Length: 87
Image (cartoon, rainbow, N blue to C red; front, side):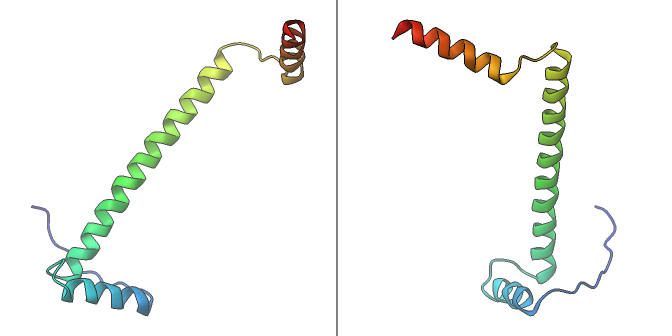
C-alpha cells in the first residue's frame, strides 16, 4: 500500500454539506473515502478522454494520409445527377 498523505481541500459549502450527508447516511465511512472515490472516477474519466482523443487524432491522420479529398460540391452534384436519372 502506498504512503498516506494528509491534504487540506477547500470546496463550496454545498459540496461540503453533501459530503457530510453522504458519510452520515452510511454510504461511506469517512469524507476521505468519498474524496478518494471521486478522484478514482475522475482519473478513469480522464484516461478514457485521453484514449478517445488519441483515437480521434489517429483517425484524422489516417484520413489525411489516405490521399486528396473531393470537394463536397462535386460529390453532391454527382449524387443529384445520379438520383435525377432514376426519377
